[in-house]
Length: 415
Image: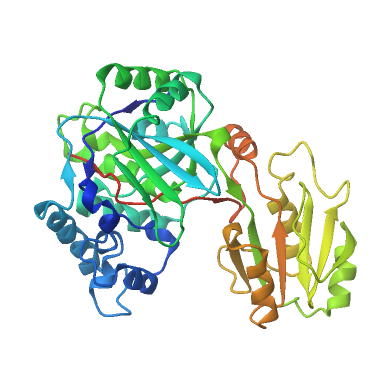
């Protein structure tokens, strides 16, 4: 059963939230963060992307960069740009994209649940990325940014959330860049806090939607602190890490598409001919064509769009991994035909989140930067949960959640 608790959030004053908040650290590079921060000394980028305080080209993994993060974090607190709540609260974080709103509960989740599989993952983590986030958590002694969880729909939690969203939020703003609305409420009523804690204790599993490396880093830091504390009990604040938990049915997963630099020595005609081994191929003309259902793909090549449909026998409908379109396309197109085997390291492929639209695929191919593009039908939340429940791992670059969580609305200190 899921263990969660309220916590004393460290938050910007209402009049400063739009100065402090930012995009997550991992959705932009150092130069983009430098440009977005500009001359705003209150931008959270000075904590989550502190390399922007140094000369361009400074490695984000340089020890002095981590140290600067800690210095800036303390500066934000000293200057009153971040202020800690006096009591433990839960929080509600709402995001509205294209007229659809999803409501998340901000909680402190227990690392034991992560270590024992009650918080389920669907992606592999990379040790270098874990190490980076572990250093960031360790030097700040805080979870600066939350993990993104999903949970099975729950009427009790839904009723609590519904009562609060009819009241005036603590924060309410349209974020620059994404243009989405972000709202935030504080749950301070002790009865509501108890109801939330009890409701989560009856939920068998939570699912990581986004933030696998942050979750792993939190568990690693917790393990360090346990060893350093001879009187460790298990209820210390360092045993918990910050997560925003959304009902699974509310979440939006967009397509995560591929562009490739070459056809592995094949001509366009030869490539199309090889596709016909496992797919029906139909020329859809020059207008953008978007896949309309599972096991359907759209290919952009030489100024034309093609509809590809996986033939029966090309995948196992009873295999939770093999039935995924990301696996079908990786096995039968990228690997078998194009010779691209490692999606994490190959320089011949790049990935485009669905928020950019299929027009971005067309642009990158038409510009000559890429040779062809492949658009996929998005993975469903049910598929993700089924795979996590089965103990399997999704193929790389399978999911793209939108909207992304904004960072800086609340921070969880480990002591």
